Amino acid sequence: MMGGDAELAGEIKSLKKEKKAVILAHNYQLGEVQDVADYVGDSLELSRIAADSHADVIVFCGVRFMAETAAILCPDKKILLPEPSAGCPMADMATAAELKRKKRELPDATVVCYVNTTAEVKAESDICCTSANAVEVVSAVENDHILFVPDKYLGHYVSTRVDKKLTLWPGFCPAHARIMPQRIVELKKEYPQAKVVVHPECRPEVISLADEVLGTGGMCRYARRDDVRQLIVGTEIGIIYRLRKENPDKLFIPLSEQAICPDMKLITLEKILRSLQRLSPEVKVPEPIRIKAKAAVDRMLAMI
Image 1 (cartoon, rainbow, N blue to C red):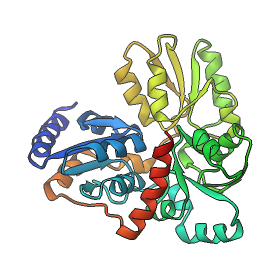
Image 2 (cartoon, rainbow, N blue to C red; image 1 turned 90 degrees about the vertical axis):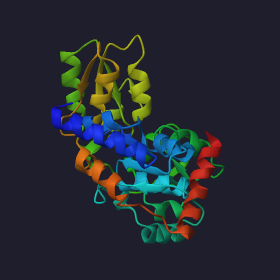
Image 3 (cartoon, rainbow, N blue to C red; image 1 turned 135 degrees about the vertical axis):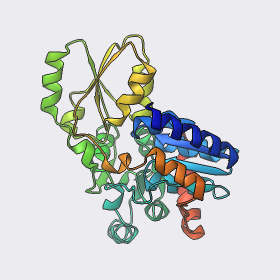
Image 4 (cartoon, rainbow, N blue to C red; image 1 turned 60 degrees about the vertical axis):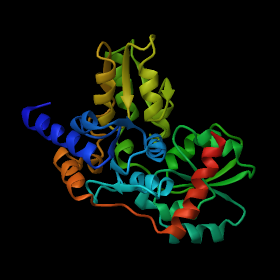
């Protein structure tokens, strides 16, 4: 950390103790934010940590739907999102009103929603899933017709691994959509010994060229394997910082330098400190929505 960052980190550590707070950072956050966090992980992993924590205050360094998920799971805690404008373009591609209309069109379908959705959309869904357990969740649903919301690429990946009819919502992650298959071909020529791991939010033609298809938590575990020495990584580039930090003797090559989520880069050390000082901005989910959304999340948690 640079001098200024080290000073800010010290202030944050002191204030965190005073406020009985815990700092959670998603794998795509800036390196200095990951360094100051108590836990770094994927969105659901962090929300479960929040629910199990004895802290009074959760500072969630991610995007809004992640903080909302934490608020859904632990209504007794104060959930802070240091930058309230940090959103998710893919989550915004599905609204509760649109989902209600689609459910009327497809009354026989079970709604499986990716955790990358708003609380309101979760409340209109039957069950949630993550990128890591989407195949498992869809397989376990008794119905053979699934309405999968909102990521068409994750939904397509699931459809290739289950014997069910999936109706796919037309949403996608702009950062993962920038990752192209030709780049894998180029990098494999340059690094012939490297493994290729990509996120299931990637395009099908990218997924077809990968050695492994994993969520961010799975990528971190895969990178620790002894047989993995060089890894071409197809996801938002923020994870490269964590991979290199945890595996300093290995080589990590981002599949695309353009795979950047601007919203994930909005939170800074200054904003974390200000959030702790003011105990705001706070993320709350209205109780009727929270209860319905929690039921969808709980059904998933009961399966895994």
